[in-house]
Length: 72
Image (cartoon, rainbow, N blue to C red; front, side):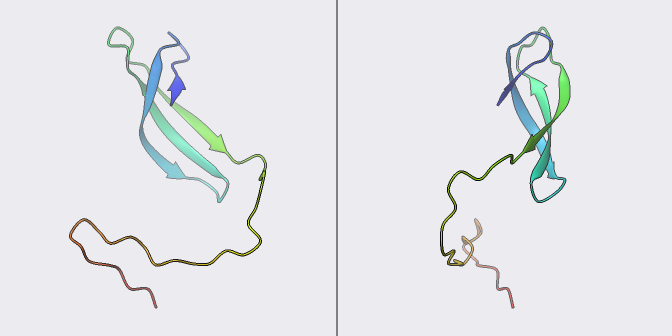
């Protein structure tokens, strides 16, 4: 969540898109009904604080219908 750049009230993310592996573009909307500003922001990874030594892949979570996707 971010604050609105105009009125400083809470703004929620309405949608987002991955721009690069480290950057996400978010479309935000102010929750103040008297403002309603819509704006874009970028969220970027600037540093990894602690990385695991080994990453073990896990199967994806099942979908809401209970089916799992198979990747080959």
